[in-house]
Length: 451
Image 1 (cartoon, rainbow, N blue to C red):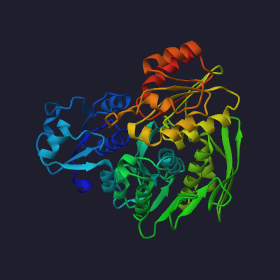
Image 2: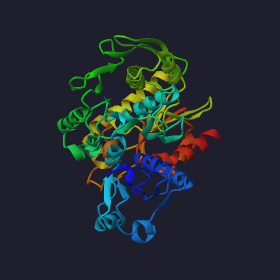
Image 3: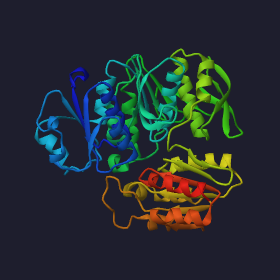
Image 4: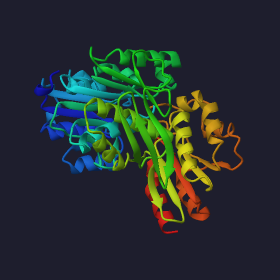
């Protein structure tokens, strides 16, 4: 399907972060954009304010007239998270509409453009956001489709005037194999989505296939140690090709030097904490330099990058209490997040509120979750967020809690967390998870600010 021939677009699952970015893109182009999602959120409310019609009832009767019968200029975009028995989804299937996954649409949009694709089991949202910010802030420009709301732009889609597009390439369901990038990045290849891949070897094979999608003269960057041939390595390591060195904490910021075989940039100041974010920034610098962007402009852009919402986002920092929220939902992401907190606040008691995401992920990585969660000072565990899954017998938060060796641990419902925090007033709180844990952010913020 050609981009120029699309006049109407319907999104089945429009509230997803990647789907909403595409919806905004087509609305900006002047197409008629509508969508369905089962839950009203701040993001869907914002889309409505931007002129996008959204229904929250999975009924064909709620569809606008333009989407009742098949038309050649109409595109339907759906997410694999939508149940197969969805009435709206099956209406479009039965009527013969052109149905595409989000990743396929990204492939259509990026076709003919200079594409920078960021992949990885974790780190891709922050890395793609930094790359996009570097290109925007330095005046190089780009269009970008991101997996999070960037704080600098308060959006998950950026619009450019040139032929460059930055995309977050999702490995779930092998979606990223629809892309053919000029520059590709693989940030990590840790085992995940085993409900799709079965085991780590099949996941790694998928990433090798993604790397093989590069255009003939393309460039592949991979975190040092990843088994990808013909890649340029990057890391906070003296043995990487693009490297961050002399890493230190100055005040509340991380400062480091960048070097490769040609370039050297000293005293780069980064608001985002943690070695993992320094490494994400390192590969973004390498890409910007490859594109010929001035080193001093790169340094200035990094200094004013404010991060991505729900990626180590400060919610409260009032002198008495600190509250940070993060999207981490994999053991390695939790470990990186906890390490960053400890580096910044080594003397404070760390209270973590964690919502496990998916029954299969909790089951497959129970021992790894237990090990990293046992390193905090106090743990409040919410029930598992099921997302697209049905329950698995014996897999619940109690199953995970029993494996955790920490003494100060408990399971708590979301309804009681805010009252508990109000009663105990922890000095350093971290909420982590990829489900609906974000619904308690504002209540916790209000409680702490009024303490």
